[in-house]
Image 1 (cartoon, rainbow, N blue to C red):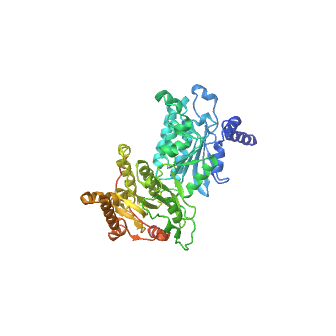
Image 2 (image 1 turned 135 degrees about the vertical axis):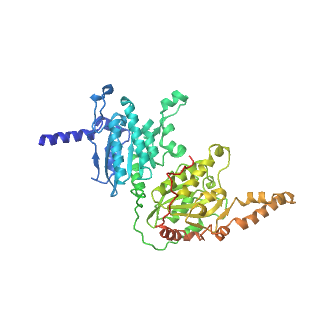
Length: 513
């Protein structure tokens, strides 16, 4: 028995070495942790239980039978993160480049099935060169098995992906099917086809970083939601993100203890400029409303005219969607509509109440927007809010113009409570443009058309550039002082915490794609 135990211990040590000491040293030389080190820093101390450590591949193609590393290039198992059950897989680039084949895929599939059955989050630490070409179609089948389970788990358990190295080909589609993607600057890449293939097919000269680096995907494509300067920061970011999320769609996110006190925030009174055309940073409004230092922004560098993220209000997790007047005046466009819609749908899937701060002058005009389907993309945000059944509250801080007023969680599409600050302007369009249309003849016939235009602009503004007409019709529940915002929101969300709403019976809707 002692000999068998020693043999087992040797096997375990061999598995932990992965691709061997030299390859591990090479990994460290590139400022990258090994797969096991990543899991170590992610999970609570001594909580990780590995599954499938002794699994090997089953192929003899192209001499693979002479190279059968234990674990087949992926570490899988379960443990706790801040005391909460979480499942994880971490691909090991030191073993055949982290390439995926039958046994590798079966380990990931097993852990995904366990996460789904037990209703706990799944985290994938991705570091793979793609399919293992020596195993042919078996590798492709393994990817499809994973993609299918990503889809089945979507909206049931939170799925988080961290790109910890180069991920190419099929390796990028599983992360794309998950809820949030994190990347590490300068060491992680995502692309369907690499720079060499791009050069061959399109004759474009492009580096890996330019084609699919963290900066590219966080600013241009919007594929990734978070970027970090190193792997430890990335792992800590995953932990923080998870703290705002429930275990599954049947539960609520964990709430922190909070004792109510003086919830008046006077600094909110001085954020909105006197000049209605002057920008301000909506993050000041968010920071002045939510619990101190609790706002965790998502997609920070992409579509910056809208701000989305998680925060806590009186200890409870909420999702925030806010127009950003400091960027493109806060207009809605293609990218901001898609960004907002996806975040709204995630929050709705996982019982996270939604808070909307609205200051929107409308949709961005122009051929670029129209030719790139602003109609369809704007409808995505409209659809997302309209189908959401979680508690939904809107605070209009300044402008709420045109169709964008409807889209940004208006009472008409199912918002539960709508507040407005005295600085609110709720109208079909801005006073200047409206006056030009309504009083076109009078302005044209006036001796001083410019003066007449300004007169009519002031007349229109007096009538509509305020929240009181909307409040008179019940579209706004209450006009409040800015410093009352936090207090009103705490009470409103408390009132709505047992909200029950249901959609018409159907298989699923057909969101504009």
